[in-house]
Length: 318
Image (cartoon, rainbow, N blue to C red; front, side, top):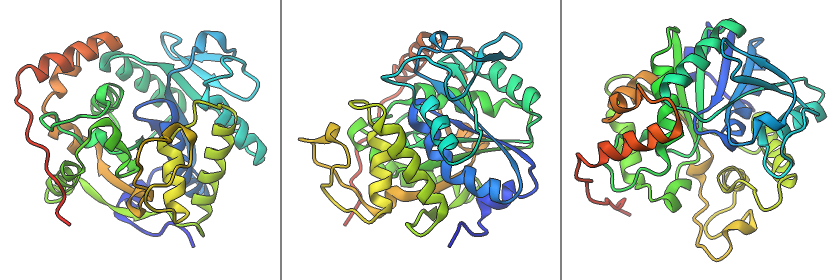
């Protein structure tokens, strides 16, 4: 059992060199592990990149790009031990007999991220970029009652939207996990509906326990989380639990104890999109294009929110 022929994967079929990059940083890159394994099995060159929340200055390695903003993270590069999911992910790959670096860069505004992605396209000779997002808050257009944590996601989308590259896609994994960040999932489904007639929704597909892609994902998540006690990812551990058949108020990490959970099969489904369609739907994309650091981004989003009245919360009928 494996991932089959789906519209999202068909978009990547002619591509030979693909970058999977965490849209929101941190653990987001782990949600690309299933797709990484599948694309590698198709004979493609696949690379990983992450907007990192770790102190990269404390790590050693090759700095890349025109302004040396990109660190090639590998096992043994040092840096922070308590929170460095990208390094631990490279260690997991090493334990599987694979040499897979993660190209890391610090949080920044869309203008700087565009330069970073342009450097990655040149350095790695890419013909496709896929942003992978743990959760679905990157589908919020801006006037919903809650946007989740949009700063990094939307800065990444704004940057990749401006890339001169034939294939730019967004892949979401973890429907429902953003509830604790105030995301209304009726509006997530509305976004999917909006992107369907334009051809920007490229289908949804489940990760199932028998798939080698899911087994790799579960193994990577467990490896990384075990090495960062107290900083385990609620998102990725919930996705693994859902994919293994857990349901309801199940707690794969102690970080959620005392908070009701709703683990469910929709969490382990990938949702694929044309990135340009998602970008065009965002009401505040123009506010982000000239941002340079994270504070610029937060100011831009705040300035936009001052201009709109959020819509009311919509409950999904049962």
